[in-house]
Length: 206
Image 1 (cartoon, one colour):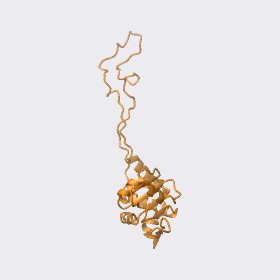
Image 2: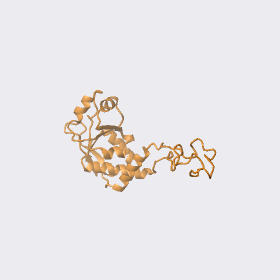
Image 3: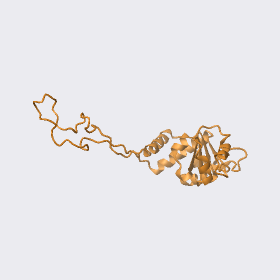
Image 4: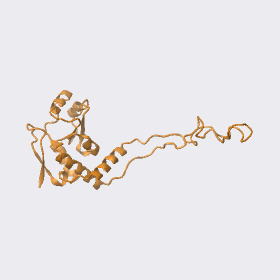
């Protein structure tokens, strides 16, 4: 038994598109979706922050002054964290924030998100969403009827006209089906997919 994704509007040439229930009819697994989104966001962190410890700063070969008799507090090295030019006590080090998530969990998570988008009527199909010119004005006209603060367009393959027309629209994201991100899906108020993109998604998740 199949499900149907509605067209963007009544005039769209794509019409209503039938999709398999095995991909677009799954229950919403909130825990898995949260884990998937966190994994993607963590993987995007640079992790390049670095500070110097007392072993990294210069100087400190000898005691600044003798142990007793000076009237000052004892000190062993100018590299100490309590000195102005000393090292940092608990210095940050470059690290990798990536989290492991196996392919099966990824597929189930994406299915869960897509199914929920379809249930909430936030997922539509369109064959006419691609602009015929690289003009932003044409793209804005195509999106004018949508009551959405954030729009995601999923295509089978990036089109030059689409990329150029969409790049100056702040509320619009464009992505290829093979690079589909759970973060973009969750953040979008409206997801518009081409029939070609849905076919690729179906093949990858089946």
